[in-house]
Length: 254
Image: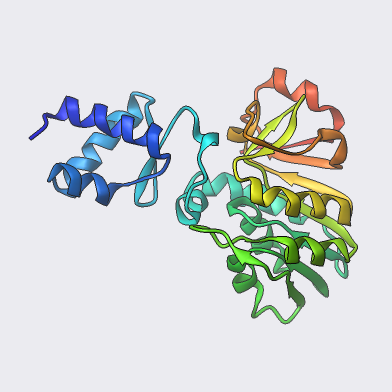
C-alpha cells in the first residue's frame, strides 16, 4: 500500500497523463475510501497542483491538451460561466436567429436565451437542444451529425454542410484556447470545420470563454481574432493580455 505522499504524487501524475481523472478510479486503484481522496485533493488543490471538479480532478498546467468529458467541464467555474452566459445573451434581440456552438460555456449562453422572445436557435449540442426543447418561445433547429465521444457535440460533413447553407444574426463560439497572435485553437481537430462554418455563417461572431482559456494555445487553429466581432470573458484576464485584444474584448466582472 502506498503512503499519502506517494499516492498524491501518483494522483498528480495521472492527472497530467489523462487530463480528467474520476475520483472513483483513484479510490479503486489505491484501495482507499472517498474521504481519504477528498483530503488528498484538498491538499493538492491548496498546493496548486490540481483543480477539483464534479466527481474528479484536473491538472493545473496543460489543461488545454485534453478533451474532457462534458460534465466535469460544465461544473468547472460554473458560476463564472453563468455570468458570461447572461452577458452574451444580452447581446441578442428578440426575433433574431442565433447559432450556438457546443460546450459547457455556451450551454450557459443558451440557458440565458430562454427569457428571449421569438428566437430561432440552431445548435450542434445535444445537451443545449434538450435544454431548449420545451421553450415555446424558441424555434429550435439541431444540425445533425455524428456525436463526439464523451461529449454531446455533433460534428462531421453533414454538420458543416447544414451550417454552410444558413445565415444567422449572431453566433456564439466556444474555445479551448485563445491567443492574441494565433487566435482561437482547439484540442479536437474534428470540431474545427464546424466552428469555422459557424463563424462564416454569422453577421456577428461572438467568442465566449472564461479567463482560464486566454493566453494559451492548443493543437488545431479555428480562426484569427480578426474573424470575430466580440470576445466575452471574465475580469480575471491579465490586464496586459487585455490590451492585445483591443475594443473587441468585453470584460464581465466576476
